[in-house]
Image (cartoon, one colour):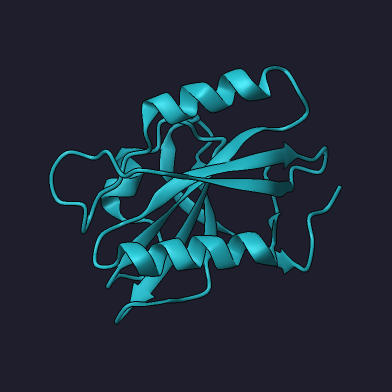
Length: 154
């Protein structure tokens, strides 16, 4: 079942956008915690910032801290909330996945929330998932609807 949308509380969108602006001209990154509904839609309840531990130029690459991810997985255990995706910024580039993002898309069930930053100002985030063809191979990304909400959805 393909997810149709992702729900993100306004406060989390604001925090991720602030982080994107603060990191400019480098990329910020972090993990999205929440639930995948039976409908295939996602609900984000927490956005956890990560240091960008990518080797090389942070202006066009990101890597979430493996230690942070491990700690979150341990904390969440088998509970209803899990890591459902990650966010990162694209300084000076559109809020759509790059060829490098596709190369790094090892988990096709994860949401990619991308915040474009133009001249130091964060743009509205866009969400994507890996689009798999009938053979199950990564064929690129597909944008999904992002709905900001005034408060977390239970």
